[in-house]
Image (tube, rainbow, N blue to C red; front, top):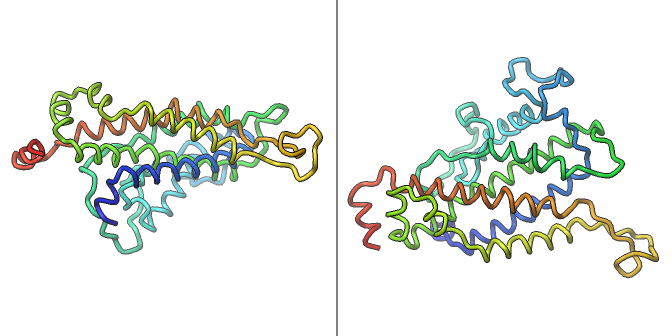
Length: 278
């Protein structure tokens, strides 16, 4: 991978659009199961969990087990992947280290705890709500598997804001430097926020969620909406759109601002002078 490719805004935009597809499809799959609240609690129902586990819930345990395996195959060596499990508690990779270009400024920003909270408390209840369906269908493993996949994809999407911030900073460093020095978060947020792009994103996401979530019956239906065929939706499209509007976009912006605030840390006077002369 080349530095210019990793920081090209059009390239980043394509990656984020593919993640929209990934997240939407995964949420459609999770919506097919009941809420199953018990997997998010410290329940004695799961007696088979490791006795020494520090994870209070079935989801927490499954997330740690998954990330332990993924760490061994160097998933978290990639600069765009962030585990929910503390890095120091994950094993070292069994594969040789890859030589990734140093694109991002050193930082320790990881907001996965916030992602976990809004997903469990704000997204899941709406995503799994179905009239006449039980809140618990017993499919705990399948539900948690989808949860893990969604959490990982949303985490990657939100933390990709670091690449956006780095690209914008390198493009016009002098616009950012003074605001970084004075920790003017409002000014930094104004520099990185593009309302028109956010509106277009939500409109695109609405179309995707409605299209991908269609279930078209192969039996002709006289009152159907498409050429006499009955059309149903496997997921309420508003759930994924509201998740982006209320959580993904604001938290991505938070990651970008936090990243910019530490962007000058550790730089020498010569490096700062070079940036200011650009």
